[in-house]
Length: 201
Figure 1 (tube, helix red, strand yellow):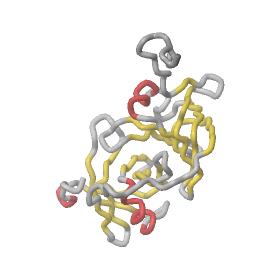
Figure 2 (figure 1 turned 180 degrees about the horizontal axis):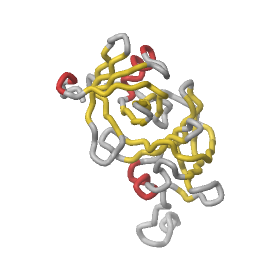
Figure 3 (figure 1 turned 90 degrees about the vertical axis):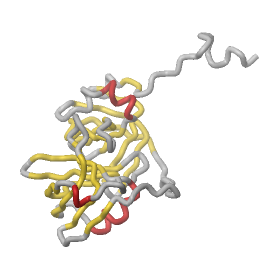
């Protein structure tokens, strides 16, 4: 969003409730509360260092950003701390690499607090009431939209990380409870109908 002038955008104020993470454990947004309503604020991972250095849960914060259609989301162009420091999205850092982290099997079962979206409003998972971030790919998330909606009961299993900002799970299977989990990705159908090893001989 480096091509947008932050000064041209309206400002929304609230309290930072908690950070949310992507499947690599990087901060890519936060939940902001304003008059009892919660809004997801999306920030790109390359802003993580400045955001976590200058902001903590409970801090007052102001955001200048854009609102995609059909999503409870504010895609931040600039985040302003209570002390007046402005953290601006200067555009992607193409040389930046994801951190090397070790995932481990994790599962969760709870109610959905908030749906999570990508920067253009694409559904990407859910924040659960226990604080767990459950991530699903945007193409797969469309098929599970009802389960990822606020108030829904949701169970998930996948590869997870415990970070200093909380737990994040990249879901491999989700459902309304642990007994009714369905794979997030459908098995790939062989092109010739004879299976992957049809030409192995």
